[in-house]
Image (cartoon, rainbow, N blue to C red; front, top):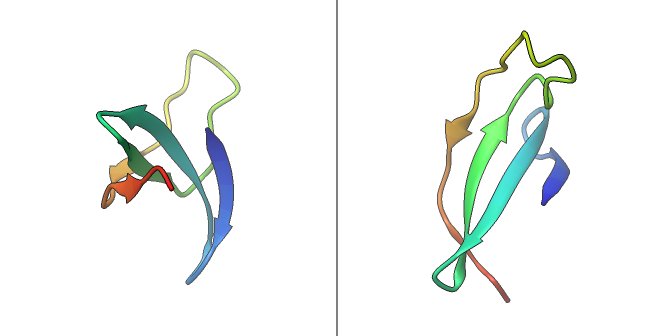
Length: 50
């Protein structure tokens, strides 16, 4: 799942389900639309599925 998130600053979270939790990365500049470019993703704390 990709979620727009605005806590301290607008950014996007990428979350993947694994072993009952959502493993999460903050992507400050958004998901890259061009495969030739990558954007920084910073792993954050896991979130429970519920």
